[in-house]
Every structure is written in C-alpha cells, then in structure tokens.
Image (cartoon, rainbow, N blue to C red; front, side, top):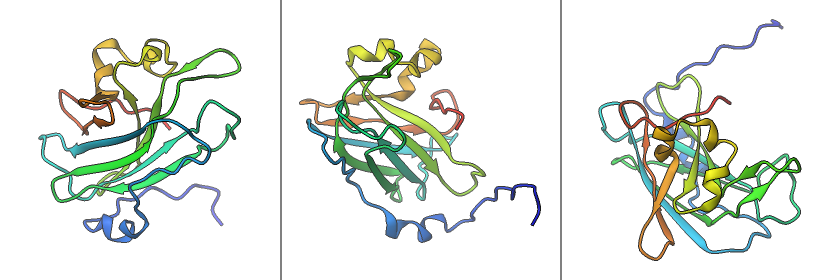
Length: 178
C-alpha cells in the first residue's frame, strides 16, 4: 500500500444519481427545542446559471444544553432540482459560547458537492437580525463587505429564510478551508 493519499477526482455528469436516494429535507435534532425554520435557495455557477445536480449536506449543533461537542446533533442531505433550487427544514439553532467564551451565532454548516469539484466547499448559513452575528468567531474572520453572502434573509413571519450559494463571481459565497 502506498503511503501517499489517493488524489481527489471529479465525479462526472451524473453526480446526483448515486446520492439522491440518501437525501432528506428535514434536519432532525434530538432534544432541540425552538421554532422551525425553512431555508430555501439556489446554487448558481459563475454565470449566475442554476446548478441542477448539486448536493448540500447540512449540519448543525443541538440546543444550548448538554451535547456531544465532537458531532453535530442534526444532519440532512439535500439535492438541487433542475432550476438549482434546494429547500430544507430544521429547528432554528441557538447562539452558544465555547468554554473559552468564543461566541457562535445561530448557524447551520453546509457542504456543497457537485460535478466538476475535486473537493467539497464548506460554508455556513447565518440568520439575519441575530445580535450574536456581530460577535461570531467565524463571521469576524470574514471581511465586512462579504458577510452578507453567509446570511439568510427572513421572510415575513421569520419561519422561512432565503439564502443562495454563488460559486463564483461578484456575489461569490464565502467558503472556508476544511
């Protein structure tokens, strides 16, 4: 066996076929309490065209009570449709603090997989009008002029949120190193 890692490879034009059977659009967070939140959006390429066969993996921690810090409490895998649209529902997460006092505003982690990508893209979905956004440890690393790409906008009533992923271009979503 070689000591070198196997190189990443693109998956070809039929990416979604192997993964859509594993998709579900509802994040289950055992023990979490709070309002339901539906997040809708689109995955768009550098020409603002929809990506019809992307897969999002969305992860979130549970409520502010006891939890396993190693693994998130909630997980779902969501496919885009032919218009590049996705939708999932979850319990809206709460703000939390690490033992050292670092603030984490309510957010959901998102991984983007799609044909042509050698490695997944990692980003976060924050919620507009959250006071904790100003102190969030990850948001503070992002230039102020780009933070909007990570923040979902609430619809009337605050139960539905809009957030698009722009893979390239002027509105490119901020992606983090994994």
